[in-house]
Image (tube, helix red, strand yellow):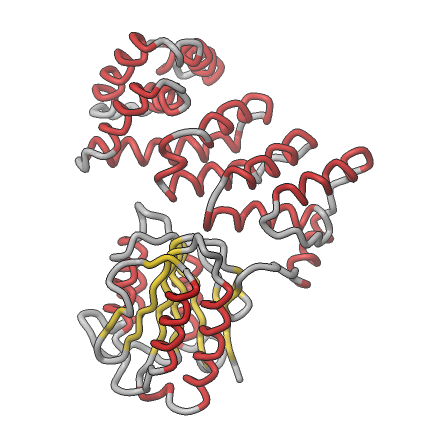
Length: 378
């Protein structure tokens, strides 16, 4: 245990490597869980992070169950365990690929990766930070493993380094591309990547106002205040209808409308079956503009759903609700999302000149919450 707390990183890494050799020893793993619980109560996080690395990557069902108890208890220890797990995943960006890759692969098979969006996001973001043939092969493999929202980082990364190949989330197509290109592959320059980002790329899958939809659990939030009267709301309905119809069958979703009040089409997420998509479109077509703009309650309602992504659309500044000041709403939502790490995508319908109150609010809301902001000026 002393090696795991040593000031010398090489000593700590040697200690971790020793720990990893015991991942399949049930008796030792059971004891390591007990040691982890004690270490999580202390101020020195170094040993706890190494213990987490070994236990998270253990293939033993009983160890996974015991670790589940640590993370799901809902107390300060659980929160510290989650915080350190995210920190640890981010730390791997500083390692050489040879050292990081086995751990990242182990993480991708873990309970946390399957059930915690925040951890899934941290592992994927660490994975796309590496360069080299082995890294690309792993990134493509991970695209086939990962589900939902976090695929965005892999698709964007692969599209950038490939010069704009349009294989979307199809891991098999990317694997074929790599088989054809790896012998002569060279990474694009930073300037070429910047150009690729400026040009953009076709997603090939569902989109909403040009924003690709990767999430498998999502909620659309639409402003129906009186300022949305006429062409604005009609255009939104058309975009929402296209997006809803394009959702894959394994997607779960709902729709929230807000003006002075907030109302959800379904109180729980529903599968995107043909029947449910038709019902959702009928609901959207019945929306009528009325009242003021209760932005805070609309966002808080969206965060009550167990989703990976929120698509929030508005044409006006907040004007009613528990919190009205945009900066205060931004703080409240960002803090609420601090542990979950879901993506909040924002669409501003004629939000005023760049830098206006609404424009700045929607942009910052997306930037602070793993999303993208889109202006709609006509």
